[in-house]
View 1: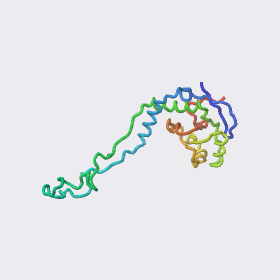
View 2: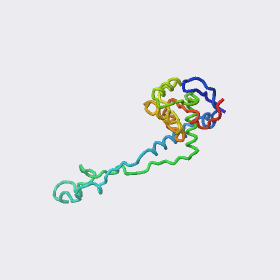
View 3: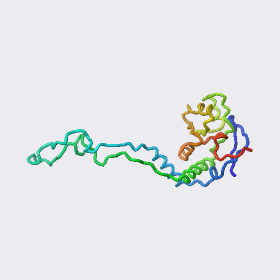
View 4: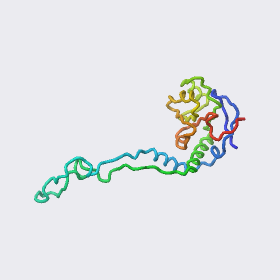
Length: 206
């Protein structure tokens, strides 16, 4: 079983914590991660883009001039696409971009992303945050003591209210609840920081 070094909020070692091999020690599957992330981004799309066809634009449907005798091409309506103010031909219409992804693939993608970060030593587990009150200054000091740089994903539980309020104002920190953990957010951040309570598949520390 894989293990990750356990630290306190001051950056000092607090032992090791066993983690599930099927989450933190698998061979990263890049194609699965790509497919799951692509589906997740597609599911975020509203699909509300729309243009008006010649049947929907405002204006008269009257024939602009006589069929014959003008020397010009015959025209039936000024609402045709080639007229200024006319309808749009083959424009976007409301649609669904939703892609269904099997749960096993979603889990494998998350495990691949976590395992990739763990293999690089970029997964940090904190014994507890020990914030007696919300403090952005204390949150900055904690991340500095843990040695994290760049973008940091902090995974919390709903009960860690002081930690949530402490980290939420930091521009380089993304907060996420453990139940919302996903491959895309893991891959978008340089470091993943768990508390002992928010670590998925964790065993007793030793």
